[in-house]
Image (cartoon, rainbow, N blue to C red; front, side):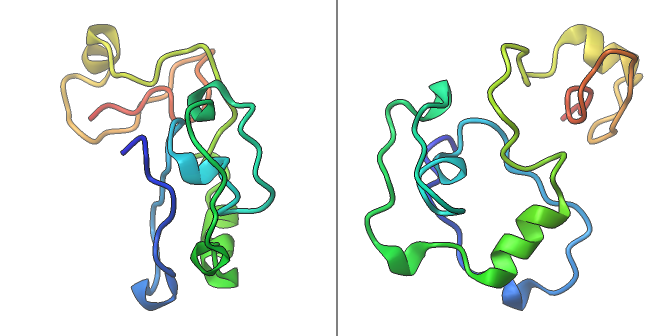
Length: 111
């Protein structure tokens, strides 16, 4: 979903327990959430959102701000791809979130 440039209003979704948008989604830097800033290496091939009607609504912005550790984190050279070591750390349990010292939030998620 690298080219995800916008999402519909989240108002009708109801209570959201977990929400994540990882590096590379264009909506993190194309102006969907605020000012357009394409300086993130993941966004270098993107473009600013041209249609202002597609910008995030206040409800959607609130959802993004409710989950700051798992939404549109700044660029990091650490890969978010699960590795064999990360999977073994979680005993092979899919969708389990594991924490190891030195890992940033979201770095130990195993899919």
